[in-house]
Amino acid sequence: MTKYIFVTGGVTSSLGKGIIAASLAKLLQSRGLSVTIQKFDPYLNVDPGTLNPYEHGECYVTDDGAETDLDLGHYERFLNTPTSQANNVTTGRIYQSVIEKERRGDYLGKTVQVIPHVTDEIKRRIQLLGNTGEYDIVITELGGTVGDIESLPYLESLRQLRWELGVDNCLTVHLTLIPYLAAAKELKTKPTQHSVKELLQTGIQPDILVVRTEHQIDDSIRRKLALFCNVEKSCIVEALDASTIYDVPLHMLKEGLDATVISKLRLPDRKAPDLSRWKDFLGRLKNSTHEVTIGLVGKYNELQDAYKSIYEAFIHAGAVNECKVKVVPVHSEHLEGDPRDVATYLKDKFDGILVAPGFGERGIEGKIEAVRYVRENHIPFFGICLGMQCAVVEFSRNVADIKEAGSSEVDDLSEAPVIDLMEDQKNIATKGGTMRLGAYDCKLQAGTKTAQAYGKTEISERHRHRYEFNNAYLERLTEAGLIIAGVNPKTNLVEVIEIEDHPYFVGVQYHPELKSTVENPHPLFVSFVKAALQRKMRLERE
Image (cartoon, rainbow, N blue to C red; front, side, top):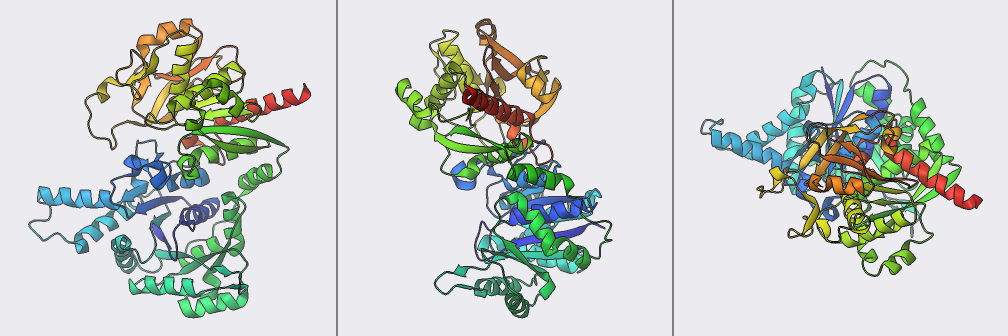
């Protein structure tokens, strides 16, 4: 029978429930157990696809085309296994399902209420992955903070499931904060006590308490927490601030979190955790012999989580190259104006430039100017989604001499829309879930830098966009020197572009950052960092 673990949070948001859930999953997986993680978000959006990146960070896309919470990125990066639509559920999706059933008459005229109808739907969704028979353990992270009104139906569903499944098959991990008062030079347990009390009011007794803290907790604090939170002392887990999120599994191993879970759920202790590859990655990450500086040209730079997967992919790629990657955000709007100012802004600062994905016209011209600068100055360039489209526009204007070239996303009256709306998108009015989403095949041209990086010519990558390379301009652009390095074999849509006589100039329509994991760093990020490092070393020799 599948066992269920729930991770809840208290005191404050952003304590790292996703990292704790992913770390625990990694430890259990390293013991030979089959584990998956799912995220239940309490907001009313059906999915995060229509949310502004400033509002909720990046929107993570799965192979099956689900637009999901960024925590699913952590799950995949830690476990090295793909997630799906079933791994992320929102209150909006729950209520949408309940209302659709009510409209169909599935409830046989009953009064539809939060209890039992909404809670039954939540419980059904929680157990979907477990009922497949593929997993020994399903970890469910409940978004929000205990005490939030919108979280109450989820906590009630959790309470009911604990009763239905039994204590040997269901376990709750509660993550809280122990703040340090500098004036008193003292750690305070009271916020954690109140958080557990709030959880108890919903009928849930936490089995394990994970406490975030800046300073080590001593035995007296563990005893105090155990006494006032009604949790065994051995089940108080210290979560010290870490220098990198990838340290957390080892910290949790040291605290015995996985062993406690196995004991509580009466699981067979099959073997000791095998984290050799993880430790090898950390060793390379922390003992890098080189450093490169990459400029990340985007327009959501005020919130690092807006480009979370890109930052993490650089960490993975840096470890492979034994090179620390320093990512410096560059606001694309600051690059708009006189090209000489752009040169001044970018000159001698970066070993490579990545032009980031995004939507809308704000900052587009700045991205295009950044592409022009790196193309003309032979600085390694990597363009993702909108970044690739900006590269096509820049090449069209300044190399292929299509002066009026543009994107119909920015100007729907463009005289030469080298980037245009897909034909099947032109009559769509709604926004949510209507883009080209999820995994699509791509055929790479042999001998290109992209094919060399992958080591093969047939790949599959995840997409999230509405606009495409306009094939009406394909012949003219290739004659001018644009290399079409990859196309979709079914639709013939351009997926990858490169240019000749450049150390590294690659633009991709898809989102490679979404498939980079600790154990399988993405080959394009690895090759881009390698190119940036080679350029830096060459300049140092000169």
